[in-house]
Length: 112
Image (cartoon, rainbow, N blue to C red):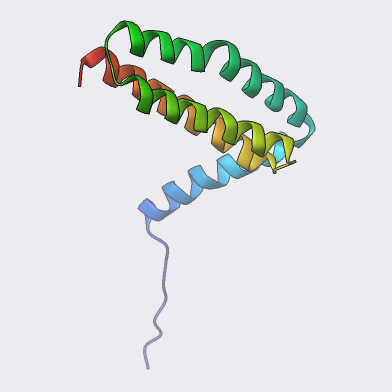
């Protein structure tokens, strides 16, 4: 009788490896939890939300939807950080917020 063996493919190893690297990075940042909280709150309140609003408003973009998305991201970061969420959640939300704010700015500048 023949024996069937299964091996993992290289594509799944690559994505699994990136996810594992993120998880080990986020788990290693537990002692810097207060720093992630402060950087997230300060960047949102002083740079991301005002800059997004000013650029969208001055270029004639969709002000209300963009500001609403920006504020939801801001408050989700506040709630996650103040409720004591894991650093995995904190870092993920901060990265997601940076990505979405850049996407809003790119869409507004492009005039879409």
